[in-house]
Structures are given as C-alpha cells and as structure tokens.
Length: 331
Image 1 (cartoon, rainbow, N blue to C red):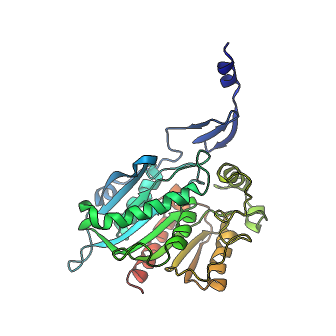
Image 2: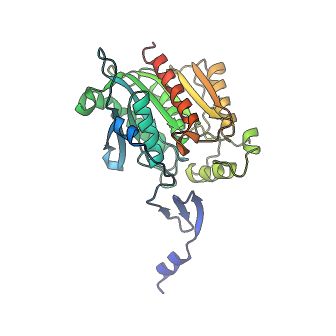
Image 3: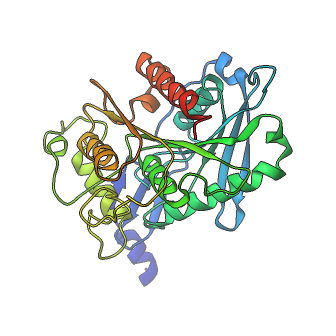
C-alpha cells in the first residue's frame, strides 16, 4: 500500500460538530452535504414570500438568499424595511439555504414584513475568526450597493430603514457590524436603524453559572461550546479573544462608538444566557448604549429555529416586529 493511501486510511475524527463537519487527525475537514436540521414550511407561508439566491462575493463563493413579501406596505409607502440576517451554527456549520434558517427568514419576511437578506459567510475550521466578521462587513457593503443597483429590490426595499440581525454566531456577527458601521456608516442612502441579537454566541475563560449548571441533554452544552471554540479561535487565542467575548476583559470599550438601538434576546436554559445578559448590561450601564434585553423563560438555545412554527417562535416574531416598528423612523 502506498504511504499516502495508508495515511489516509489511518486518519480519524478529532472533532465532530453535529455530524455536519468533522476535523480529521490529518488536518483535513469533511463536510456533509446534508443539512443538520430539517423543518417543513407551510404552503401559505411559502406562498406569501418570493425569494432568490445571489452571489454577493463570488471570489469566495459567498451567497445570499433574498426574500421579499408579495404583499408590501401601505398604499402610500409600499416599500418595507430591510433586514440583513446572519445564521447561526457556532461559526462552523450552517447556511441560509438550510431548511430551518430558510423557514425562519420566510417568517420574518412575511410577518414583519421586511425584505430579508440572509447571508452565508466563511466557516471554521477552514476559516477561523475573524473571517466570519470580515464577511459580515463585505455583506453590509453589498447591501449598500444594492440600494442603487438591484431592480428586483427597488420597489420593495426601503434602504433608509435597515436592520441587522442574527442568531447565535450570527448574533455575534451582528454585534460587530453595529460597532463597525455605527449608526450611519453605510453611506447617504442607507440608514442603520437597529440591531437584533438572538442568543448571540459569546465565550470566556471563566465559567458562568449557566455554563456550570448546563444540563447534559441541552441543545447547546458547555462541551459543545468548548468544541466550537477549539475550531474557530485563531492560533494562540483564548476564549477571551475580543471577537468571541466582546464584553470580556480583553474587549475594547465602546463608549465613543455611535450605535443604533440594540435588542438582545436570551433564553433561560441557554448556556449563553449569563453572557448575553452581561453583554447587554455592560452595553447599557458602562457604554451608554440603547439596549433592550428580553429573556424567554423555559427555553433553550435556538428554540425558534428548531421549531419555527411554535407559539414561542410566534412570540419572538412579534417582539422583533415591535422593535422594528419602534425604531424604523427613529433618529
């Protein structure tokens, strides 16, 4: 047997993330072509929204799925707000094309209503942090460019009312977009009105109470979070790396950063719950930002994408809609 073939046969799995991605002992990465989560989409929801896929950064094979509701706003202003969305997955797995993320974005487009732009980004371990945040910035620049160049969006999207949102890893990206672009940093025709962080991914060297008390059957466990950290952090970085722990001991202060209002949503039984609250409190109390913190009692991480049609998911959609309506014309 040739040496290369023998080495290939001897390679074994070092890290496995929900069966969707595996890091092998020889440094190679195996990715499954199948989504890790499957959900059904009711016909009435699918019929309420039209969507299409585009490449927003062809050189890196980065894609976006764009959604526009078939029924727009009131007759005197048919256009609706824009919601740039970043999916979750621990920075290692996921795509806006996965059924669970697709279903969630369909709901947001139909029920806010809004033009939703769901962005993929480079994943670890092939592309460690801050690659995802860099791609987030590229995506936001693409949003700015579409304000003047995309006829499919022209009669639907109000680019003076742009919100940025994301769940888990995507919530972390959303924070960094809020910091990077401030309140009006996308040019004269694109106005950032708010940011929605749904159980944003954060970590730290010191364990929180929520992490220590995490149930072994939780959707996201401390062990899984540690696994993600090993796969996403750049060489030599700890879990206090400011990109991953934006309210941690090594993170820069944000007092001088102008920022649109922020909605932070946490779940009572999520290991990220304490970090999400600490982040929100520090943003408000130390850095003077306008932040609303809402905790969903009895829920786990990502509950609204595990079952996008549940009553609690309904409640979350109403909460996001309220935030968008309150801030879409705010100064």
